[in-house]
Length: 272
Image 1: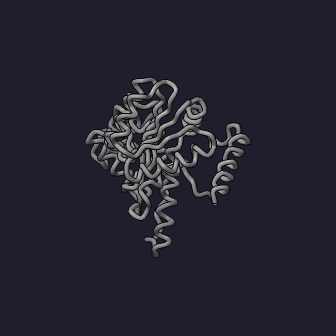
Image 2: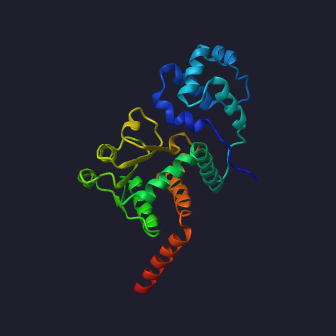
Image 3: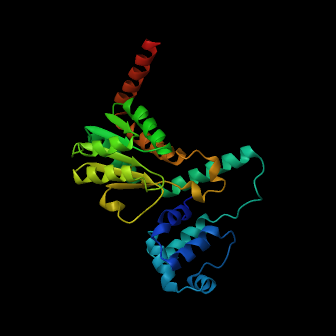
């Protein structure tokens, strides 16, 4: 059974803070709607008391060429919700499945290929995050180090600011921040970008100005918009995206990377 379908909902969510008041009215409607309706521009403009031009601007802000393309995608992925879930296990598993569906909708494979190229060319890689994002940063360091990447994780705010001074064209810097508001992470990205480093921000918020400090903005779902999102660990959306990047990267010179992985396992076993 095929579980993954492209959905416009996480795209609306990630751009929500960029919307005008009218555009948020439109976004709220599509996010909350659970009925099959007449989604033509005329019908929706009359229902929401907005102009058809506003619908077009809303769709373009979401990355579509126009409202017709947006609503076509919306109708293709629209599925009526079943009866309310029962049981804690079912609730948790459905929340994770919803998260995976949204990750698939946001995923840009060409972007992942570019990021893997950055990793392959970098002399040093730094990944920073605070709190739950810091745990994800540590996990990324452990996994990528074992396949030959010269990578370091940073969880301390002061260390992030000091490390910013030493970045240059030979380094790649990953910033992990679900909220997109972690000041120390953004500071490191900003300063590293000024110094010529490749910078990548993994976040759930597509905010104006990020393009000025990031070579790549990688969007992940926000738990805020998930049904029962409070049952999911905060770092999980980032970990899923890091797994995708890892799976792409390990395919480059796969045999060599697998040998490095085996060597690290052997080194640990020798200690034991």
